[in-house]
Length: 114
Image (cartoon, rainbow, N blue to C red):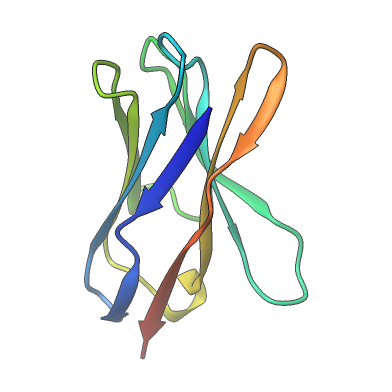
């Protein structure tokens, strides 16, 4: 399984970004797909996850601003980020577990200026 993340960039506070993560390889529908983020010196933290049926979990710190969604035909997960804050600055990673193996995307940098 390969995960290709994209969509990061430099924005100003209050603006929006949409991250994408496409899963490819000899796979059927990927089960749970998740977004994590990491800042220098800190552990990677969960931001949101979504099951194949569309059940979502968004952590409280971004709830109401971030939305996770997916396209099962494309095996792609999206993270729509609105009203971005400087503290959202991080490298964002997508993750999935397929056949018991954990896969990570390469990360995409999101920088929010004040």
